[in-house]
Length: 442
Ligand code: DLL
Image 1 (spheres, rainbow, N blue to C red):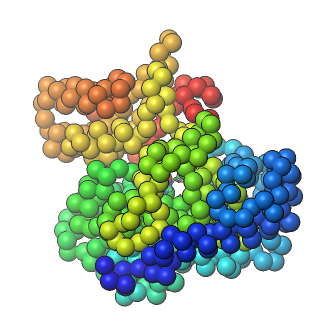
Image 2: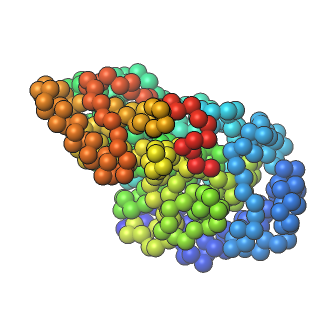
Image 3: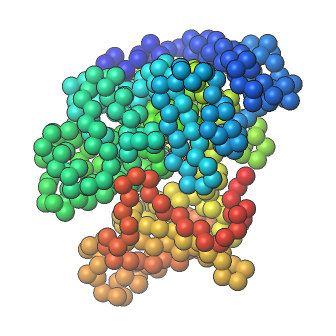
């Protein structure tokens, strides 16, 4: 592929040896910074019996202790920051639904490197500086809106900061401004696509040709559905506020895993139970070390996201390691009657059976038994079917769920458009068992 396919070819296509040298130098600097400027890390390193002088290259990373979301909460709001307040130029906070928010801060340099990640993602999706980028992620403490916004501007494209909500107006703006790229959660993109159809607009008449969709897990099937609904190329983009925001990793046009900006955010995959690093290709918990970050240099941060790494060369020419799509989270993975179930598997079955990914998973306990019920919207076409056809569809879904998940699920087909739509991250799982530890992996 030609060089204009990369935002920073000197890094994105660098040799693995060069990357190793960059990573090693940055890790050594970071560890010193943490030890000297963050009392929490000095104590943690001392307890683990590891000193900055013990770290000679990136290969020494497993000597260092892990950091968790709980550590951020315990040091709320600014306790893990490594720079004085006057060096901070931005604060964000995670959208966490449980416990205290996790607060993150950035220096000018941090914002630049994060924006580079978002710009790399846009270019990898086929966006150019001549494009209009319609950003429908929320703007605010959530990193989605400002992350893609700064990425688009750094690239030299035109950012349109629409934020989320008022979906008909979103469609109007897409149409009137001639936006070329759309950035929002995949579930919101589906909703925008449905609204385009509802407004009687042919998606091919819009100038949108691609988009970067992330902030929540989604499947390959959903990608195809979205591509059809909006007549676009749909790219996955991954990130988390603790590390940076959108652009930590991104799909290229080979669609074979997301390239990680490993020059700033070094990934490992570990077994969530033993915490031992796993070889490439094995699924486990993703862990990041923010080797290039000044304000919040997290060491071996446990993301809880489940994926696998791939260091083989990619058809796009990028050498940056790839991570698979996130399969789920180690802490929202459901255990139903002893069987691990990821919401993405449920979504896969629904799409495979020709339905839209508008669903909710409810789990409750009846007696001593876990019961999982999946509510799925009927398509408009099926809605007019006879009761017996709908019952037959339910039976088919039930048996497909059983063979894919290895556990049975009750299926309830509901009216089209009767489940709530989301303008941000979709809430799909409702675990009503009321047992804090049950069903949740460490
Ligand atoms: O969701 C940052 C972001 C914004 C990423 C816009 C992509 C696009 P948080 O709110 O801190 O940050 O949530 C981070 O969301 O640990 C994952 O569990 C999940 N997540 C983010 N991107 C993806 C993705 C933003 N592409 C948490 N696929 C992460 C699956 C994702 N899960």
